[in-house]
Image 1 (tube, rainbow, N blue to C red):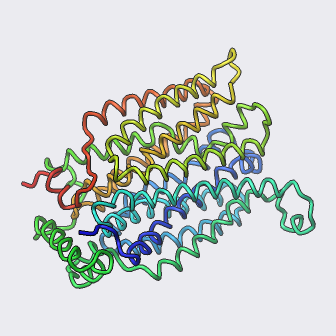
Image 2: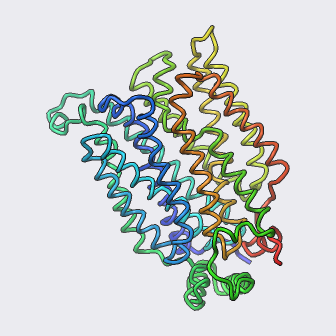
Image 3: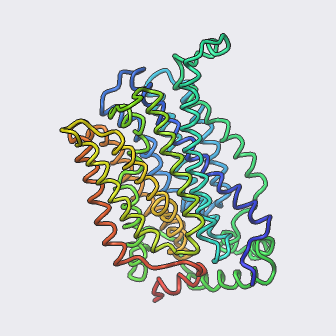
Length: 467
């Protein structure tokens, strides 16, 4: 049986995955702007951490709420709301006249990020054939890291344009208002994505959950052909029959004995993804590179190295996309996390090299290796696992809950990172991250199943014990 999605299904998946681009682009524009915002508003360490991490704070809340809301109103509707929120965030950031308004913009951005991080992988997993599901969900992560890269490139371009003294650039106030341009440009992809969503249907499994079997059948038939659509719909109905007569999923439902195993797996992977420091490093990369100096040190050099970091993120996410349905989730996660540990130890050594004077090349190579290993493993595969291991009835709620923990750890890591670098130093900070990665490898070897090539309903039958 052909597992390749029809062209129409591929188009739908690509449009939905563009939400990842939107989240990556909007969420990363502040990475460059923070250097100038810190100066503009004379921020101390705590205020700088707060300005960066407030986006994650509301992303945490949004992740918790998005799953249940998406179960009620639909995955596509949730993504439409997120696009509107992103546009409002960019406009608010552009117009900010103080730290308070800027933080409001960051809070709005976080609501959008949390929504798309949950709703898009859910949708893609629910429309993709089992043999290609990992690759299709990883496309969302690929678009996210492409968004991060283009945001970094956009920031670098704005900084470089500020060095030119053309009349039209002067009228744009590009030098003194560069951070406004960095943040305000996010309105363009948000509006474009809102328009693109007009051309996609709702998730077929969401239709089935709400008793709209004819609509679910039509969408699955367009995606995979009539024969495979009937088989998939039968599996979905069989899965949902386990929950006949039950009320909507509630948080306490996740703690029933038959779900504790998969919930523990989700929590371990969710915490590990952030406790190893990825979003702290990406959020403060220009500040890290500006702090270690080295050949060609300066604002432009730090932005260039940050852009290089995000390019590595894109390249290794593509490699992960090519390998995830061939090699499997488990090997990539285990070996990738082991690589993260080694790279953190290399960066730690770089920070304390030469009698306390950082070795900029060792730090750069360590961080590039860290991002490469993360993009190969924890970055894309976490969301693939989240979309696979939880049963249909509680999938939205479960993803929201483990995503909440993931986002809460991210908030904590981003909030304390400036303090860590100032008071502990880079060597100890990255040594701690490396130790967490070593612990993660040990846990993954013990608990992680392989989910490659199995339908969502088959995974439910094997991973969840029905009473």
